Image (cartoon, rainbow, N blue to C red; front, side, top):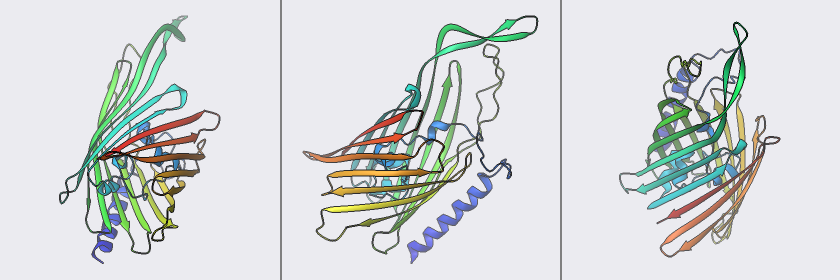
Length: 335
């Protein structure tokens, strides 16, 4: 009873904060809310297990260090030390890498650290060249410049009761385009609650709370003036349940459903299914609803012993329609 009341209190408080913070400055007539925020690389789900499930990650449970990038409350499932390395080639030859580590301090809770980087590669430089008496025309100089995004953070999660876990991240981030850059900080919150009805669990997350930021003032060289850039605040609620989980069974089927309310786009829905054989081989699939290009996802994974260490390899495929297909790989080690 205590854990149920605590879960409801946390749930209501997050909704109140989201209602006051997430909707501020957004016209109610703009249902799409497109283009209302920056820092878009924070939306990339770089963990192959989570991505293969259609991005339905809040209520997965059985967390590892990559829970930092999904629901930090799931970090409480880490039993000792866990490390995860994620790599992917995004659309337009953009590369993404991340590293997450979690350590169980027993009665204190689980602490974690993470870093992720997005690299856009070399970009041809185009400038405004004078044309006529007052006009300008775009001119390709033959030079190139680079752009990259970086985020690093610390995390904490704890089991409040046997049924309820909470967690959070504090993160620092930086974006750099040529000689211009800006930095900011953000907070993430998450809860995971086992209802007591079979394996049914409910989870909520609120990600990317933070102030506005900007690149700086007028740039004479690039002829730009930065405006305030909002954080991509994101609120999710999900449920998950296991099937075929009778005692002694080598099979496990998990179904996850999740709703997503961002501050810079229409509401979305995620559905994921995972099948596990003997807790060793995994096949996953998912579908994203109300997205412009992303739809189907699928993937697979394997868990294998390495002496006193348990290793995992996960793969995910995400279809971006006419843009391209994205392949993700994750390597994990539990000590």
